[in-house]
Image (cartoon, rainbow, N blue to C red; front, side, top):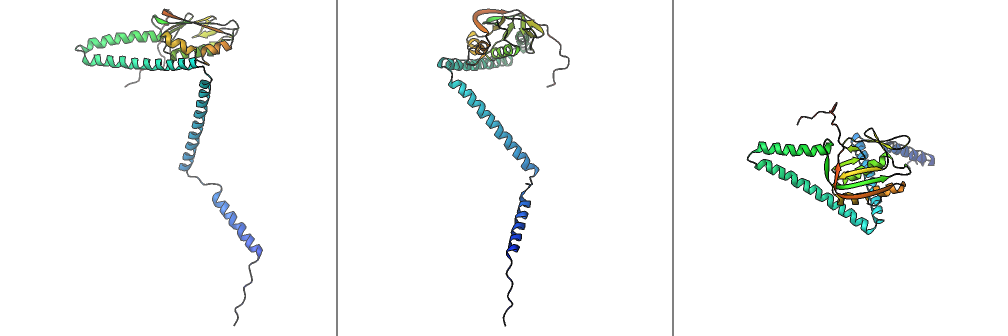
Length: 259
């Protein structure tokens, strides 16, 4: 007895099944279904990659500037870094010495008062409430074309601070922690609301051997001023006097936070 023959499946049926299988596969894969944890990890990886890319680019730009610098400029930069490290080490040693005196003194109350008076004097210099004197430099910025703006003076101030300046006066304005610069229409700059005109005279107390190289580094303050037709003259001195003072203002909102 012969078994009945089955009719072969048509080509069109195979095609339909194949297309249906593809549609089911695509429906399973797209759109991707991400959990909240996977999404957070993806965002963190993206942020990390972006940060690394920015850091690499910034490092490459800095290295490019250093590759174009002259040998004497590189030596000056290294000397400045060494000087900054020495200042930090000296400050650390002074703090440790003060702590040792307080711990070992037989009359801790008297020693604490002496330390407090010394610290008050130091803070007065930083706050601009007392005059200051010592070795330093006088930086004079001549601006015959009127191209020096507030941001350039601010950059100069920041460079001096980074190089270890301890007291600064610009013309007759004492520079303190909240000093601000604004441009004035018609020429000139306002410092803390007081108009200051060229030539701009920075009287700075600090180590001249640290301050002078910091201003002369490649692409630094002096080069920037010269690119705007200004002329910067640096005069190291054994003794300068910062005699402008400010009246301390009582904070309106800020109060000491409890320990």
